[in-house]
Image (tube, rainbow, N blue to C red):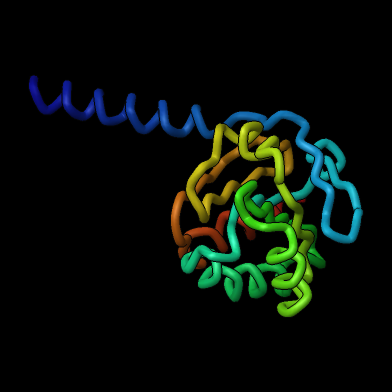
Length: 161
């Protein structure tokens, strides 16, 4: 009888984690460094990755080649990636970093931490969210992500389009 209780408790915990992630984010609006504005509402129908990062975060810098890989493979098929620099990151550092790396995906400054609050008070970098085409958070990672973990999920949403 005890194993059944343990299994039931574990299934309830897993279901709770899944359903707590599968939620719609408020209609956040991003202003990229090039002044282009994007809202999550306008990006519905596409999978969207929102990654919170900082120029002084070693793990964030390790992720950039992975973002570049995902972007080059899947952007033409509909994937959007948005980099959100943390409020404490100096804007001139972010701008210079973006120029030196020529990042192809939009980078936005979150000087007032508004976006971090809208995504659940993000305070640790890197923190990444994957939104499905309906605008629901279906995957979240705090810390360095693995391409092998995220890529299959992205591919699934691109096939559904």
